[in-house]
Image 1 (cartoon, rainbow, N blue to C red):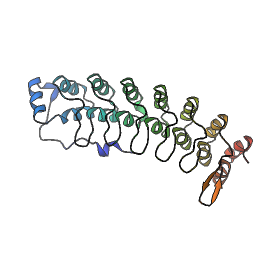
Image 2 (image 1 turned 180 degrees about the vertical axis):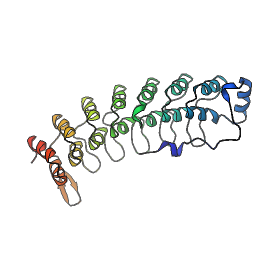
Image 3 (image 1 turned 90 degrees about the vertical axis):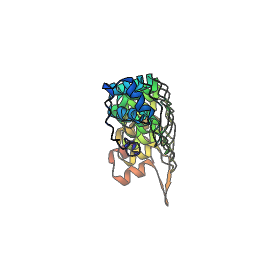
Image 4 (image 1 turned 45 degrees about the horizontal axis):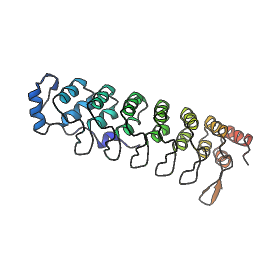
Amino acid sequence: MWVFDKLFGRPKPTNLDLRIATMSGTEVHRILETGKEDELFGAAEDGDLSRVRALIAAGANVNKRLSHGATALLVASNKGHLEVVKLLLSAGADPNIKAAGVTALRVASQMGENVEVVRALLQANADPNAKDPEGYSPLIFAAENGYYEIVKALLLAKADVNARRNNGATALIDASQGGHLGAVQELLSAGADVDAKNSNGATALMVASQNGHLNVARALLAAKADVNAQVKLGQGIFTALTLASQRGHTEVVRALRDAGAK
């Protein structure tokens, strides 16, 4: 998992202890003019709504980047500070600015409890298909981690259900590998390609079967997954059945055979 905090932690504190909520507009302007606009970043990271509001009122640039490229909206989204996110968006923060190749929506999607932040960003026209350097879209990341409500929100916003990351995996393949039944069902209902293969040739049914995820395998079979699809791994040819058999997943083996596996 790409760790946002390591790259975009708060800059080293200055000796100046700002108390924005008690400062006059003139004082705030003076601080901004002397290069201290990173205080908006710190206030957003803390979820300090009053400080953020005061800085915006004093003219802080909500889209200013720090040296590592992050904006106040990126860090507030990462921390799950919903009201700060809403305030920044209402003040004109751009939800599609990237830092290290990721957007606010991408970082918000990495925590399941951030569904309301995700919805706020989507309402502000955040791109649901923007990918990070590894090819993860917000949907792929949320599906891989089983964040069911975020998956639903992204699909409602017309996220590409068949987008692929750099290794060819789709949201359905990653959700199936993790055994996330709810996400799998949502993706299938949205038209996910049940037989899509990653760059190694593996399908969602193969990875679900190999990992013993019986209910996910059943859902994929009900969606007419190719039960006899093959993948070459090393010197061997494998199917969902052989992969499940090797791992001793007897119930999955039975379900596959009942569906016509050979």
